[in-house]
Image (tube, rainbow, N blue to C red):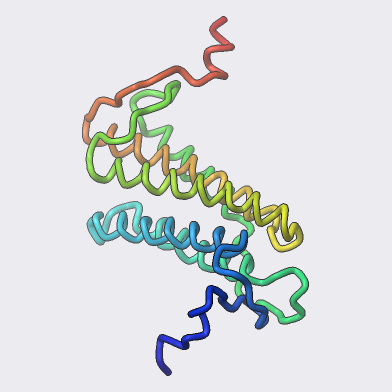
Length: 193
């Protein structure tokens, strides 16, 4: 079977269940953005040593993103069953990993951080911002087809951006690289007032 079908040459593409949509639809924008994020996570994994402590968790996230994208690709009006698993425990998985990293760091995070530091930290920020964009496109898809965006997907994607922020900090902390702080988090400022 050839990779090219020529069916998309007029700006339409197939979705789960056989329906066709324009390539700039809310669904395609969402799927494309999450696919970009997944590719950047793949780049992050490629930059890490094969036995790095993050490899297994990042691999799970990549597979979970593929499963979630398969469910988002299925319009709620489709009668075709999607047998891919629902990674419903993804938000909790992220929270446990975040807590573990934060407990191991030398200082808590009270500030917005300028992205950078070193290559791995900067890649974590790239993952974070692409995931955030994916979250915004999820909202657009939810407004168009609310029944196809499961609650766990919104929670998981929201938590992923927190995870990648924490990973960037953990990487800097591990290598003794000082964070470039920008501003105190708003909720922290209110507490100090």
